[in-house]
Amino acid sequence: MRTRSNYFSKQGFTLVELLVVISIIGLLSSFAVVSLNTARAKARDALRKGDMAQIRTALNLYYDDNEGYPVATANADCDNWPPPVPPPAPPYGAEFDQDAADCFSAAANSLSTALTGGARPYLGTMPKDPRNPTNVLALNEFVYRYVSDGVNYAIAYRLEDEPGVDQFVMGW
Image (cartoon, rainbow, N blue to C red; front, side, top):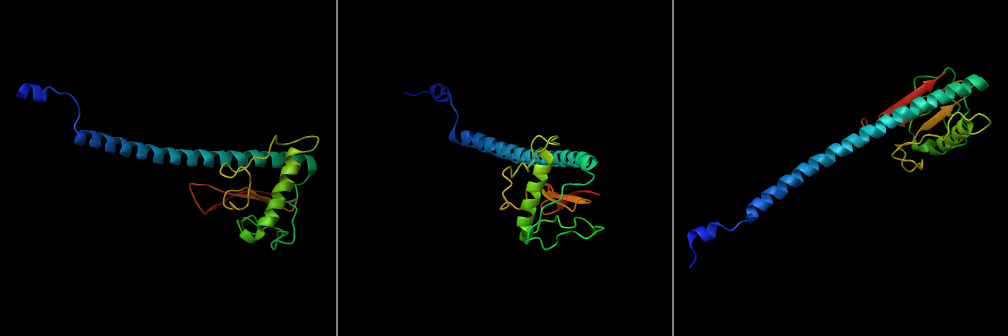
């Protein structure tokens, strides 16, 4: 016959206790994942700002050596090219406009060639957006867009902290 002391001496957790612990662990891990994603977005934004500082420095060195900025090559798809001189309010053509995608692709290639090639390269490799390292224009929002007439330049980019808001680095 079972005695009361034998019944309570068995060790283990009840199903309810296990479910409570598992749900608490799941809740805590979901908070950790959300915090981690926010930290990753802030790290990518910091990298974007660092890239802009690096490109600005390279452009200033290029300007000192060549008395002008690399001219962005344009094609027929660039309806706002060349920018008027003096430039109006930012960005004088560097905004994220889907219609001008081919124009900015050509401009990015000319900038990369000017800053990474030649006898004195100003950059080892051209920085690319961390969310779009292949620089595919299908991901229109996360690319670095460069326009220049040789006297003025603008680089447009976007941060994840401020979606849909264009950021600009400009020089003249």
